Length: 242
Image (cartoon, rainbow, N blue to C red; front, side, top):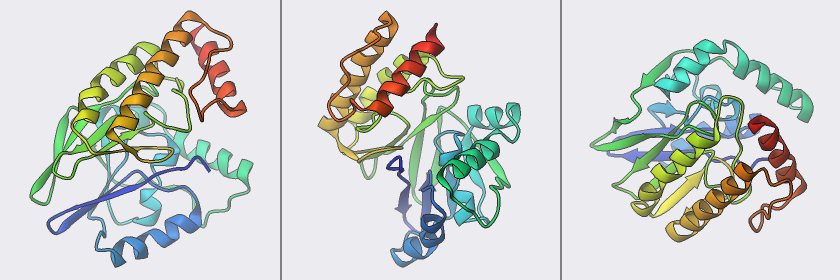
């Protein structure tokens, strides 16, 4: 569901998990999988405060969760919202969890800014627009860029409550040079991309936003994303912009 991605990175003796899988069996298997591969995380980071990106704490309850400063503010402004939304989605999908989501210790990260990972550095870049918060993570030393809920090959740009069209455009413009600097681009949902594929999707998404701003009721959606679900998301985008 949602083709959700989580990314483990390692530099020297330290590793970090960015975002999270969704289902309880995935979260239960994650510690053993990462430990066996030599990527047992020392820290957790979420690209934004949507509930499906915060579940690393379930797999690793002893670790602090790193969030950009705007995401920390969002959690403070919307206390319990992520837990309620997770509970509602679980009920819709008949998912049972052993315990509710507990965020525990949350560490505020500077955006823009950076965090150290062993001898290397992860760059943190603002990525608002989908929501009011968000960050992209660039590991230049290994050519990996994690973009959160942007540049997906399965999902059109989604303007969620708190997001905005103008901010989404700004984020796409900010991501363009970061994509150029990376070899592998990992969206929150969908397949990881090579640089050229990510740049193509970025152009498609900018074109979609043009149609959204015009108020097109039936825009031509990009290949692979013209589905009934994406049409529903487009209708919600239009409603939010009115």
